Length: 324
Image (cartoon, rainbow, N blue to C red; front, side):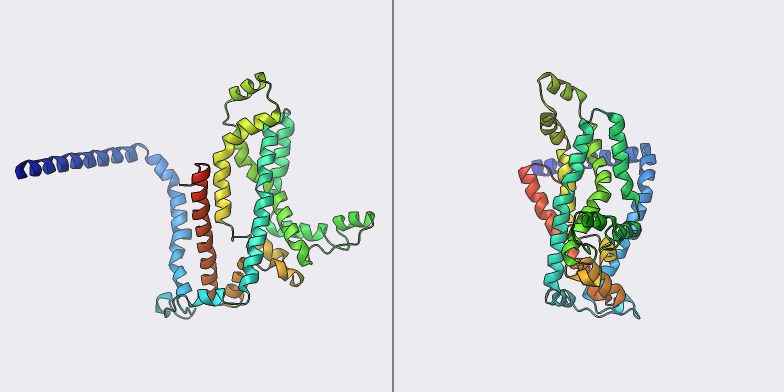
């Protein structure tokens, strides 16, 4: 019996070694046959290694009492002291509240607009008008953020802005949109919708082009209206793309656009415009508290990762669509 077992184990090892050898040979053949494709993605791989993975070495200063006059490895370890300092600070509730409210507002308003716009363009009969509309709405995406915020200051100026001129024509007093806290979130979100709707709609519009035209023909023969075609054909076809983008947006929940916020920020609207990103910028670059600002930013990214894992699990159970 022992001899048979030993022989069986030898046979299993022989078969597994042959399979692994065969796999290695096939892998080498695939690499040689498709070396052009691997060469094509090489610049992207190098980019991510240099600018995304190599800088992760500096994350450790969040756990060290780092000084710019000494190397990172010589700074003493302080553990989670900076994280505790941030969570226990008096600014923490306001920063978290402002960041979450602004991000949720932006997600709730900004997420459906590209989808609706792409569905309308896909169902439009006049393709020339459809292409023109797509070009016009796509153009604002290329406007520099500095230029965009400058345009907002001009259009919303309480003295000479066109918006306030129209309000005065209807007997409404001028409003200081860019300076009052209660208007900051509305201006931020709707300017973001105006700038990015056309760009984001391209993703959904591209997904809709892969729908089989015979489905629309069959629906037309059955007497389906355009709304029914959208509901039963278009939306199911873009559902995987929709879920993926939604999961990625939720995974960036606390990553509110810091550049836009800083440019729109004023001393009079800090009550709603001061978010985690702007606070990290002020603490890290202006006040030179590098370890503290790194800890805050790392805390933010850990929360984003946790949210991504949670919503991905929920999506996988409810819709069977997920990132992994």
